[in-house]
Image (tube, rainbow, N blue to C red):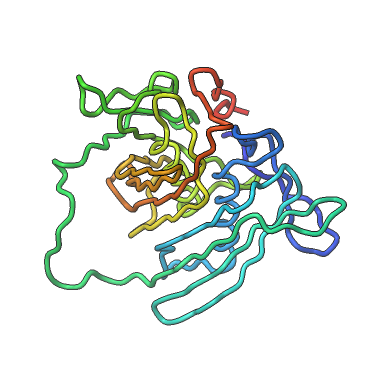
Length: 288
């Protein structure tokens, strides 16, 4: 079992929960900043800890990433908006605490919990098993490394690889990943796994022949059920871009099939372009 996590808890004089980012939370975009999965995961954890319920599924989680999170002490604030018989809505803020300045809100989000029951009568369209292109690779339980695949001319569903540089192309991409824990000493819940993994919708959708030059400013995760197992698959489904703005949608999978989607909008960040043929990402997935 690994002790890798995005944050470690620290004592706060006010009695609130505060967290110190670990090196695993570091972003590739700029030194001293945090990556999207870390920020989104912390927000999802806060909402679930206070308002999660076995009778409700967190059907939609939207997180706005409107300011770069820094490598400093971080906390969360959660506020209920509505708690009804079938719908529960909860807001969250991710707050950072500079040593010599006022607190800064770097992200905010809304999670909609829906009460589970049975499906209404009738038949509705859904993807047939024959049309699904996502086929997860075989992995071992103690391997943290994600796998990447992309379509190519020879094989509509390309081969899975650990090496990201082998998939720096202009084809449709997919990823099979295992989310790291949010906080040291905890194992991620299925909801946390879904949100952390879904943040890779930006990666698989905006990654092209020269690397990734779009940075996402939000994440919306919509699920009909919680993922089963420790691995989550993310597959690019829709991508459009114009005038330095992109919109992407990705399918979310586990070993049993599709369970949801992820939507991201992104803005041109080519000044800090990440080229995966020159950047070594292997340290992110090592055993600790």
